[in-house]
Length: 267
Length: 180
Image (cartoon, rainbow over all chains, first blue to last red; front, top):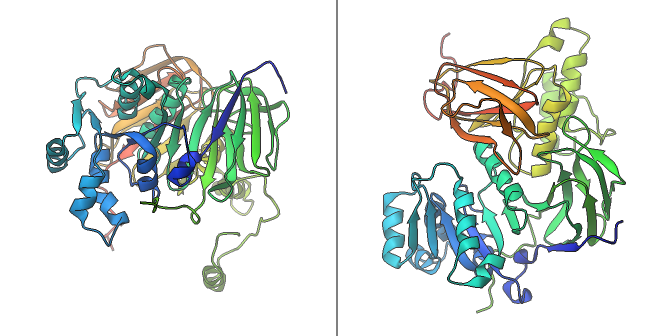
């Protein structure tokens, strides 16, 4: 392992109960697919909550379903997004009116067809001038995967286009993040919440040499490419995984179905 | 055989379905194993020239999905189409000029060309809303997503293997053939 490279550490602390993550600052972006079952937990962690266009429909329709014993209207008032941004071609008029009335900031970017809704939200978070700290947020995005494959590919490309911004794509089944080639990566595994299934995917360009530790099938200056070997259906074997590569890789790990709190019950 | 339920397995065994247990082979995906079976099937020469339609290859765990996309790249001489409710995906090998005939009552208009494995220095298309003209595409830069089909025939020529994807319409698609 090269010791000259800076280390980047990764930890899925956003899946832990809220009182266990001092000092981390998260922004949540909700895109237009079914909400993962741990969305209320991500919401509690986040200092800034954005809906990308039709993501607002999901918050409105689906969050009350996570709280079947509570009044839907009070859930909708409690889980109010700070911002709704996008080209506004998916959000329902009644949902838009509801959040406008509640005071959500709505930014209509329908003139800009060159960037995805996720893109627009990341630009907002990074460029937010009202609070310098927002530019250092780790961005959690739900609904970026599944559905139309060109949408999914566009969302994966957002990870590659903002390599200096920490972005995690989350679904019910897994999470995905970019491991830039500029750093040696240490990934801390919360084994009650994630794993063991994992993979390293050389999307975009082949890797001539990748080296890992802590996996069931570690790589050792191994070449990876589409059309040849890529690391899928691997398993985490230790609490700390390290990855070093000559190429930007996507790290993906499964999220456990059980053991994950839906929300933080501490008042 | 680590996912099939015992009652389901018994049912199809009883019906006469051939069951091939490959649990010893952990190096290839389930889709891989099925494609090898189809290609190598010696009982009927024609099966090796079948076009393969696969459902359920997308969504769920991303490493599974990536492994299934990789199957398209690993068998570039075999026609494989991955299908979901929302879209289809197929490989356009760089060795050929591609003509894609669009059935506009069934598919589109949303489409894309994705250089998943390696960048493309030059891709040229016709028939799309935003055509490419010796355009470079790469992750980290431009890739063609949220494009639209504009004509009944799309052509694609590239120096790189690309994934073609097009949306499948929610309406207008027959669920089954009702002709007796």
